[in-house]
Length: 325
Image (cartoon, rainbow, N blue to C red):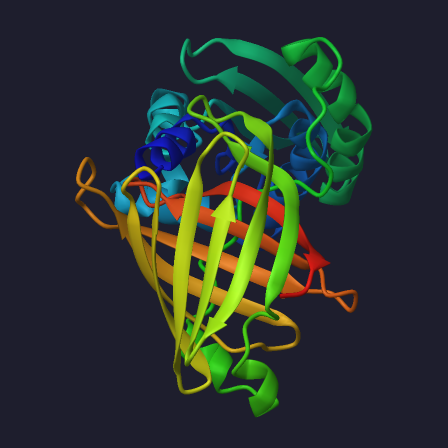
C-alpha cells in the first residue's frame, strides 16, 4: 500500500502558480502576493472538478527554495518549466505584469509541464490590481475551457480543493490546549462503522472507496481493523500516552506505520507518523486528521509527503456508526 500511495502521490495532477514577473509594473511584494493568491484560489475552484489539485503559495515557495531555485526568478521563461518540474506539477500558471500609460497590463498563461506547450493565455488590464483580479475571475472559466476543453470530470463530494498549506500542528501542541480529560482518553467509541469516500490509485486519480471499520477496547488499548470488499485490510493499535496516543499498525500488503495522535481538541484529532515496507524501507512521513460531528460521524483525511517535500492528499472518507459492540 505504501508504494501505491507514494506512486499515486507522485502521479497526482498538480497545478503550480509560479511567482509573477512584476519588475516592469512598479508593484510591491504585497500586491503581487495578493494577485497570485487570487489567481490560485480561482484556479483551484475551477480545476478541482477536473481532478486537479492547486499547490499553495507556501508549498510552492518552500519546494523552490529547497531545490535552490530563486522564487524571484521562477517567473522568467528560461526557468519556469524547470521550476514546475521540481514541483512535480502537471500544469503551471505564469504571469507577467507591466504598467503603461497609467494602467496595469497583465498576461496569465497556462502551460503543460510534460511538453512545455502553452495551452491558453488571457490578457487583463485595469487601473488597479483589484481590477486585474476581478477580470481574471470573470474570464477564468473560458480560459480553462480553452486549455483543457470538455466538461469537468465529477469528483467525490467534499474532495479538498487545494493541497494543504502546511503539515498539521504537532500533536504535542494540540495536547496543550484545554480539553476534557475523559474525551481525550477515548479516541473512538467501540462498534462497527461504515466508511465511504475516495482514495487515489496508481495514476493519481481519485476513485470511490468503501469499507468497514471494527473498533474494540482491549484493556488499555484501542484496536481497529478496516476491511474493504476487495480483500485489503489495515489494522491499528492505539496506546494511551498522557492525553495523546501512540499508534502502531500494518496492512495486508506488508506496510507498517507508527505515529502519534493528539487528544480530541475541538472535535479534532491530529496524527503524524511514518510508514515503510520491505519493498520501500525508507520511512515516508504521513499525516491524518479525524474530525467528529455531533451525529458521531468521523471524517478521516490523509496526506503523504513525497521526496520532493510536497504533501499530497491521498484519501478522504467519512465513517458512520452501523452497530455497537
